[in-house]
Image (cartoon, rainbow, N blue to C red; front, side, top):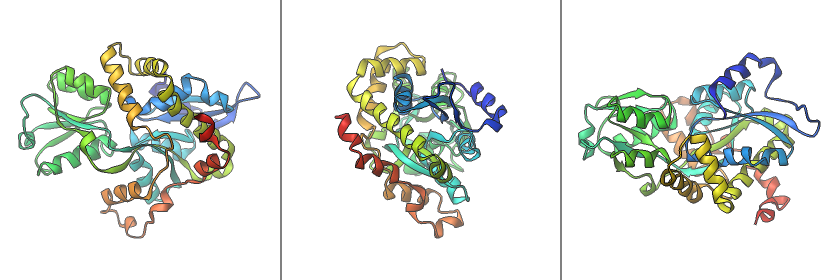
Length: 328
């Protein structure tokens, strides 16, 4: 199981970098990271546990880094040259001068519902309440602020936002009475509903394109290590294919990483993953514009061009070699 402890070890070994020859001469060792324990990490987990990265010549050391800013810093430092996170984090970093770039959009909508305690029946009932986010600046933070504004409230004045740590921990905090709600994604969403909490706003009803779950790298890493970058996304995309074709395996992987045994919860988490993962995970200019709109207070957005934040060339290479056709 990947863990933050392994990330700390990786930092201690900074001089080794994120890419190195593996003990096996046939494999290239690559450190990759993901930022959330939810259904939206399932493609990466399946690719790892099914041996798909190894199939394409990579020995991937997969680690969990829950903080959006920390995982982005690990990417920029070269400690984790491939990361999975909310795409707003890497776009913000690029606005600030980093050469980060989104190369796959796995989930192109905001996959988090607003879940609240039973006493909150309307948006107005959230006034004066404590609501949780995983980390300030993370996708859960941006999402809940959008929901709060949707109900006519000011997230800076009408509620108190507190950092909790992770999506499963948001549900735990609600059960403990520490917070009155949060933006929660599957399968923790099912856990929350079974615990009696209310889904005040359903993410499936939102008509809003957003790079909610992406695979990102840096332009410099792709330039220096293009074969490794291509092999990583081959594994990731075949992971999506395995989700769609090997349900039992995918559900068991979800149970393992989420540490859940409840069949209803795991099946629900799988259903969401099956429905929303894109088989051809192309980033779009529309979703980048949505992020730039979130950061319009930053002066850099005035001259930013959406195309500078995405790299379609890797996917285009896979199209040329008929990779997607071979998965059918």
